[in-house]
Length: 255
Image (tube, rainbow, N blue to C red; front, side, top):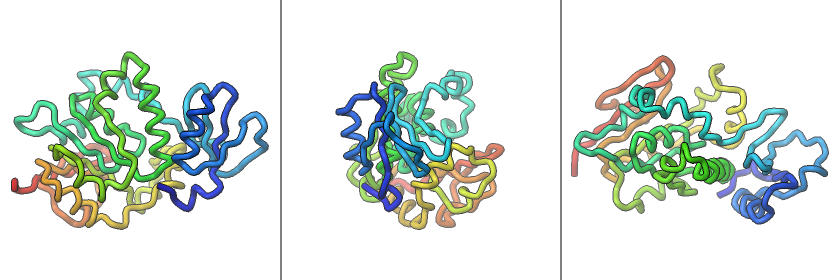
């Protein structure tokens, strides 16, 4: 699991960090380990491992997976209003199994897990997967989040090839594909521009949707810009829309 942008990627390791952990991160991402205290000015994309966890840095921007930032959204009253949580509900299933085929940093999966879902997350980019795994491990030691992330499992790899091997089959497949038009939005937070150095726009949307439908879920939920086109031009069974995003729900016929 590498991409061309990882050529020359550094992993700067602070003095207090675990060397064994740093070796695992370096092995999974293909990054070259260096001591942070001896690092000269570096303008490229860089991972940094310190006491606060793993972060991705470039040009003064810092991105770290941190689920504690989402605690206000996890309060029951707020969680019930989340459009994604509402979109992922399955009639007659109290705790759906959800396959998040495009996990990213896992914020959407966290919302679903907080709502009681069991979530299997797929992330194909090795660097993003390392950031997500680090966030999960830190959250597991936080009493406010431990029971939630216990329902979240990360699979590092391409969801298109991995979904058919998920057993039991998920009740819901969730898709949040990155498209070219999303990278140009002024609403994208500056720090998340770092992810755009790693993620490629989705060019195989038909294949992604086909893979999701092939596992026969009760529904497929697709996150889209509120005025964006349907995924693969497939009209959904229904949609839930907010100010900036829309969740299209595709309910396939039962096999």
